[in-house]
Amino acid sequence: PITPGTWRVVIGKAKLVTEPAPYHVVVTLRDVATLPAQPEREPYLDPGVIVSGERWYAGDFHVHSKESGDARPPLDEIVAFAKERGLDFVELSDHNTTSQLDFMNDAQSRVGDLLLLPGVEFTTYDGHANGIGATAFVDHKIGLPGVTIEAAADAFAEQGAILSINHPTLDLGDACIGCAWKHELDGQTLGAIEIATAGSSSLFLQGTLDLWESYAASGHRLTPVGGSDDHQAGTDVGAFGAPIGSPCTMVLASELSVAGIMEGVRSGRTVVD
Image (cartoon, rainbow, N blue to C red; front, side):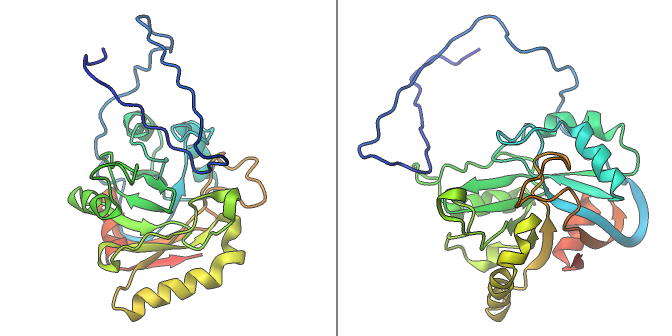
């Protein structure tokens, strides 16, 4: 049920070709459900230890499911492809939502020794960040009252998530508005940086490495991670896409668990292949 009262409509567009920008809003109210029931949805629970023992665990820190507005695959397809590639974990980093969490208990119960790691791709018009381990929504609509990049960084820190910059130098102009990192955020609030992203790695690698080194020179040793940015569970990835696991991030962890992988990243024990 919708709470009675005064509601606002926030319209966000990355590119305005005319000013003032005309818009049209249609509000449709329904009293009958139009979507099928999803009984598998339930509040997310940490699955605990999947595999015991210290070793290098292989994974992908940047994968999208159908809960992202621009992605297709359900969790089962992601799991099947990741296991086919020999991965140990996959972070579900859907755009500005935590709805994927509702399906993770069900999927995790059927995947065996693969860990589904919670997360989010915090997507703004001035850059994308990865909330590794995030399980609570953080408002991305920067520019609205009280919504700032600093407040977002604090919100991720409060829930114990690791904030990482995604594809920081992926500057494609209007072809990918907001993909390059342009926020001015104190490096102390960051814990990691995606130094390799999908098929764009070769074009933007040197610039990303230079940025990583500049953080290090200023005293902020960000842990390097890699992510495929896969939106299709390994199929039809396109010219700049890559299948899950390409690139792959190896994490030296005491165990395969959310806590184990997070501690490995916090400690800087990663290799990006």
